[in-house]
Length: 390
Image 1: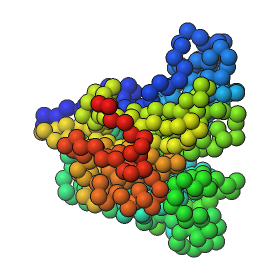
Image 2: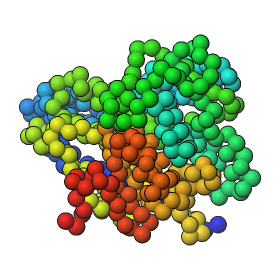
Image 3: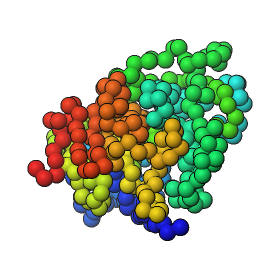
Image 4: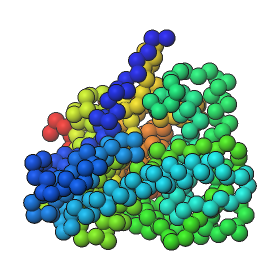
């Protein structure tokens, strides 16, 4: 079979390519200002007055950058990276692996409050999108092998797809705060879908929760929400700090918080899905002291071309194939990182028309790019989106 695995060796350079930051912050690479002790990071820079600090490196399988402005900027940036390392290593790797390996069907399994909250919020989006977001899609990921971490790409047959789909189903997972509850979703949760509600965005408690799984061999795919949820935890951390503002990028998910030291807000560029990594369809502008999370899902970062067909990594569980909804890119903007991350995947699978009700439920907005290059902006972003040719 004649095929081309596109951009396999460029993932590090393109991992921010779905969405990236304009004027990210500290530009003076010569002013390290005594930061040689932080050599574990690929890039560290703090301004002479200590009010701007940037750290950039590779985490969570992608490029990560943290730029913080204001008092104690260096400390806040370092703490944000520590948060990324902890969630990636402990929660989204070790704890997820232990859950998948050790749960028993029909018995509550105790998890940390962070994993409980991440799964709880994700399951809401799974249900509200009728499975367009599917956090148990991992059997299809492994079967197709589009991403470099798997054994290799092939187009599976119908029987293979059917067998993999038998192992997929968020409906088999329930979450509880009280172990004594026997079945059904946790009735004590805040069921508000409004992503602007800060309690819904980051409703972390000091107590662990419980996960109950009703099917064997369930395997989790947290990549569609993990980066966004990490932004939520970082935002909560920033709110307790002396930071004036921050911009945090984890792959295709971005947090803009507050303002730069000069009082300006942030500008976020949206890549042209059919251009190179520097070509934009436009950019979003955010005012000073405005907080938002921006996530993009598209068919152009992780894909394989075989026999003239592009097979990308975002699967539609209703077919077992890469989603074909008439879209090549969706950028979602809302207050919650997890919601922006999960909704961008769900909307990409659903397509433009079916996405509108879902976005409204979560008080979110989006920029859609259709497969003919048409750009559609929802009403809430029309004052923020500036086309590239303007």
